[in-house]
Length: 95
Length: 485
Image 1 (cartoon, rainbow over the protein chains, first blue to last red):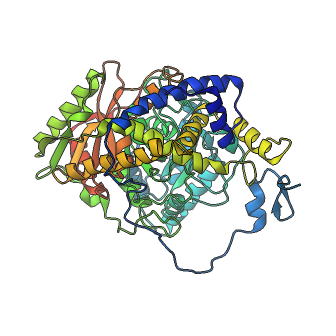
Image 2 (image 1 turned 180 degrees about the vertical axis):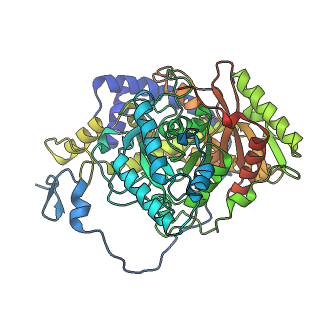
Image 3 (image 1 turned 90 degrees about the vertical axis):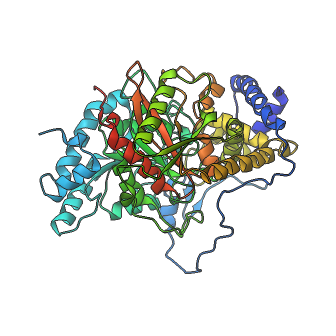
């Protein structure tokens, strides 16, 4: 289950992770080893087995629609790397 | 007078209630201990001494007014993945180096209501991803029993703090063993509650179908007190079950008459440290002598737990950690355009293990690989859970080792991720099955390092595991040993 360098770069792009050349080389080797180890799962016949996403019996839990006080905007913005007035500041998405 | 820092939570409570000591005296003694030792052990990332003393004064004032709770004025440590209003919450990561939550996690709110004193935030593998606390961006924690060794992880700071008398108890989080494994490697008691038993509101998310907040203490009684304090329904976490919280203290009894103890043959494997196997087998004989009926059980899909966990947890993590984009909180590294800023921020802010897991998870969820990896892992998870259901139809608890070996050397496994992952091989499946487990000391190896045993019970069977652990603990003295520091 050897990953190519192109696959490593593609996954990093999907995950929006900047990797150094050294990281790409290391991850190519390590991820190949790890995925190889995971091949043992293919030995099990699971064609009749449903998947488990959560062990809880609860689905779609709703709370009562009660209005409660919100956190004041300046507090919400207190951890923002960049903020102006009452907004998070980001780069333009569209030209 | 014996050192105040050695007191158990129950002893501290009793002395506080009799007004023999004040919370300010107790808290100051623990802060002095931290000042003397934290430089060598590095259990705490942040010590909040002034705040802790203010909380201690408040606790003393509440007691003077006649109030009493099992935790009023008791100083505890909190893993740095749980939000405490006004204290940094770094998750052991550079990306959250300057993040200061403006609210308390539900578990913190509950502890505060009971009058707990919060000493500070403890070291963790970055975003709780690791088994040694070496993945912290702020440097490793050292095992109090041997400073050249790891404390386990990811809640290694909390475990080391409790083991070295730098806290009377602590909170951690357990996604694949991150409370039980460090508890075992540091010789303290650690509980991973059932999935849904404790609210995760204010716990920084790693893998949402597996994460659970757990507790550390120096004995089973104290751990039961802490669990009872934080457990229960929370409208702010849809996975916190409305099941009533029993009086865990009432479950503690000194005998095991009528208790069926299962021993899973798949957990006594080749390559396990011989000291570990013999200590756990001896512990099972102690349980038999206390009246337990011991029988072998089989969990046939045990071996598949490692690949299932290391696909599901990274997949969920890759989604959860998408939020670290430098917009609302955390580090921002600006690039030419928005996407450049995202990739640069995440490239600079995350460490190697977090990047590795985001990569594995993204791969497992990617088009073309989803069915073969992620969906396959979810299906095998069904089989692992079914193994537990079948076993718990025959026995009350399952007893096994926590970790295949005692504490390993710092640096020994950092360059071999797969070897590191194997240190969780006995703890992962409890999270996949959503069941509860407690780790407690059951011996020492030839080098004097603690050995841990795990007592697992069915989902919401905390009373069963506490009863078994307590009876064993009462019959033995391992939990009374302290590292020489």
